[in-house]
Image (cartoon, rainbow, N blue to C red; front, top):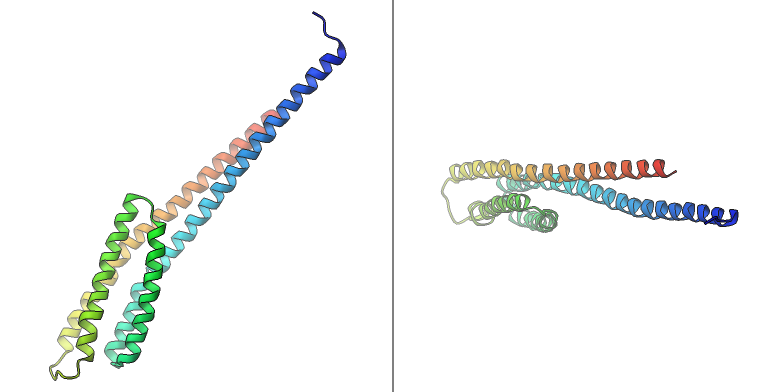
Length: 194
């Protein structure tokens, strides 16, 4: 069976059109995947920064605690603590949404437990101790002991937060590696088919 030259040209042209459509569809889906991977990597790096910011919440609390002990101004101390607790609760809720692996969730629970202990020490021990004016006893020994405990808690809080931050940063790197892998595939296929 002999094909006419016009049929052969149309057949060849049709194959070229099919290859071009395939290449366009492949590139479109891969570019969409690249966009998702890039967004994922960016989001995880932002999440790691939030975790780093959260690690300074201990120092913020300590400033309020020190001002409470030194200035002994109940109104200012309670207002500052209320503002701190609002910020802490917002950051903590945001962090709860960020952690997505069992390990990260366990670290978050450990961090929450340490913060809860510090919050309890401030609200139920420090404030009553400092602002109880009816007692004439020397509070310096109790304050020193409480100060050491809170210092230790603040240091301990940094450990799980550091682990969460490192995990989130690692997820960002993995997303970046996936991005690079897909970009290489798209480039290779485009070169081969071109």
